[in-house]
Length: 553
Image 1 (cartoon, rainbow, N blue to C red):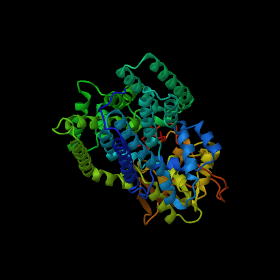
Image 2: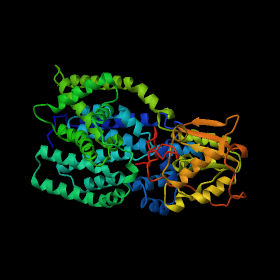
Image 3: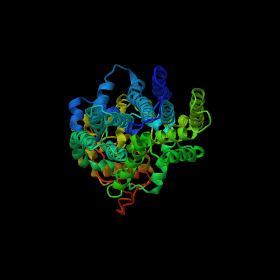
Image 4: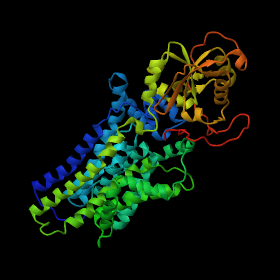
């Protein structure tokens, strides 16, 4: 793996290598910071916010019940969010800042790989291509672990190249293990690395050292795999990927620009079909191809595929494209001279800049909170404005409690009627709700009710399997009516609607005692079955038009 093109000796080569790494890292950092405070969090980020704010023992208890796959990330974010800050805006910036830094590090590491395995200009182009890819920019501004996983995998791949050239193997093992603990599916980098070693025809002793390092990393990650395997219901919303999923991933890996797609693919083909595969191709091609293919294949039996789970594999694509561009431009007359080499570097950099200009509308759109599935910050702002002190609130379904958990101050004036034990105290994401008889008594005691609902609840004949959810829906529909003039607000993918009790002659009579609300009510775990559609009268079960993800995996 050690053969590389000749490069100038001395300080010039060293400076070129440093710039090749520093420039992409700086560009990625700037893109990540641009619009970081976009004024809204969506549901997965809200889970990070509410879990990371818990105490370490509370987080540890939660991981035994749900979301163990993100355990290390939650503990890390617990420390990050402990940094002094004021208000939701500061929390949102802190929430995303680690991903920005990780995205910048990943761009630098991709550049370092290209510089080490080819030449500095290849590293520069690859790092810049990585930085301007909209998929990278998206997850560099997401309060989840995927950008950190991508940086860890790029670091492990870089150290693989160094270890084969004589450096110690333990940093490689540590990087693979740490990345796997951030997200267990990152261990799919290991088959790619094995193919790299096979293509490089390394000595048997190097195979043994790699096997020991990889085996040690797998041993560290295996407890997480065992625990998360019992929590597979979190990804029950996933379906087996088809050819369309593979095409969408290709589109995302190559920059989501239709005009540039075939140019990008052509450069990859030029690199991959070189008469003699370079060290860079032996590293980049397996990394870009194998993890997505393996996960898609496994997902035909047990669906686990989502494009963000293989974000770490994207690093291979810009490396291949840069290698293909170097092969083409390097064949130009006078490209081997010092002046020609500078001109070639400038041409490649200019091409990347033009590609970024073409991607700029996508970057701008991605910074719009409306581009996410929901905007819980907007929901919280509505609640803070509309809820009066003591107003009763019901969440339909219980996972609709997400904005209240992420922004508790916005809901502090309301009373959650269904909540029995809070999430931190119950070791759940959303808490534990009261059972149906208790909930009926509480609902019978109010004449005015705010409902925070997922849109599909109010727009379809949703028939939940959970008794408490079914009771909430039935009581709201049969015993309450929207207040006139209507007080309804739709924002961020959530409906906030005020109901009042039906007049006695217009509906079923009130039952149950009235009186003050007992203290200490809390939140609820989402139903374990997918909410079916169909009315209670028919009992029919048809999937509603838009179900939320039952878990944040």
